[in-house]
Image 1 (cartoon, rainbow, N blue to C red):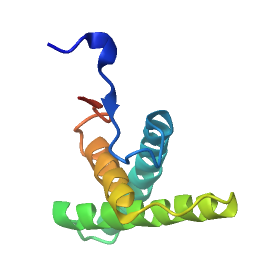
Image 2 (tube, rainbow, N blue to C red):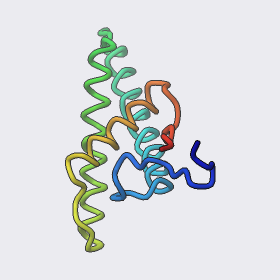
Image 3 (cartoon, helix red, strand yellow):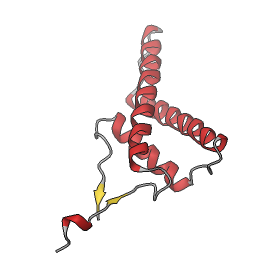
Image 4 (cartoon, rainbow, N blue to C red):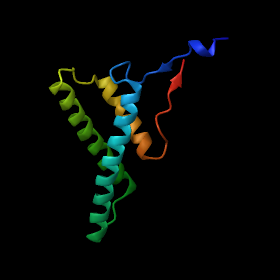
Length: 110
């Protein structure tokens, strides 16, 4: 049996984004995207059309990608490299899980 003191969280971005920073990033992007997509749904409804749940998910993914691109730009401006595709995908999945009610990032323990 492994001692609880030796257990370390498994980082979904493999160190590119520290877990504490990733949590803040996920919450911030989820909040921004949630507001934008809710506005699109309301605008669609006001025009007499109803946005399907699939269309909402597509809009959400599109907005998350745009926010992650902005995050990458800010990393580049501060001299950091852009996220790898792996970390970009991990962040995307974390945000989508947060938006669609799967909760905050669950840190896996190894």
